[in-house]
Structures are given as structure tokens and as C-alpha cells.
Image (cartoon, rainbow, N blue to C red; front, side, top):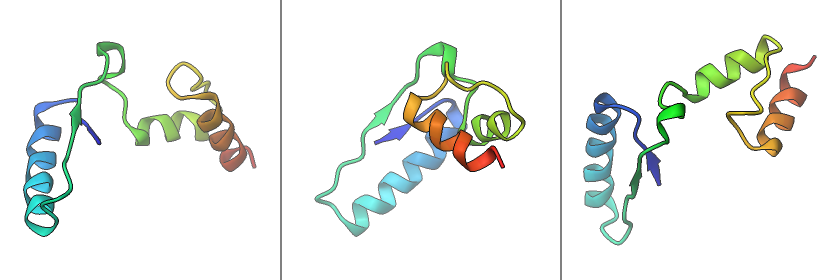
Length: 74
């Protein structure tokens, strides 16, 4: 399952899906579009916010928030 936020994401993920299909045709790739309010997010942005002490609770599940806090609170 792959998330697509923009056209550039699609181009990259489409190439990967075609290669994966060549290597393992029995595995399907599913593309999902995020809600508009999350289009600007990516893992790097969320990690940077968390590293700098910001609140990421509206962007990730509580288990991810807790893991990020544990990793970056030192």
C-alpha cells in the first residue's frame, strides 16, 4: 500500500509498481490518496517537528507520537 500526495509521488511509485510487478507478479500495489488536510505532510516533516519539540498528535496515531517522543526527547 502506497500513499500518493502529488504527481511526482505518482511518477515514482508507478515506476516502482511496474518493477515490483516484473519481479513478483503475484503481489499487487494499491495506491491511496490522503485527505486534503494531510497533503503537505511527509515523514521527514513529521520527524522534524517532533525533533524540535512540536506537537504531532493531529498528524499521527498516538502510538507513533509516543515512539517519536521516546526517540527524540533525549
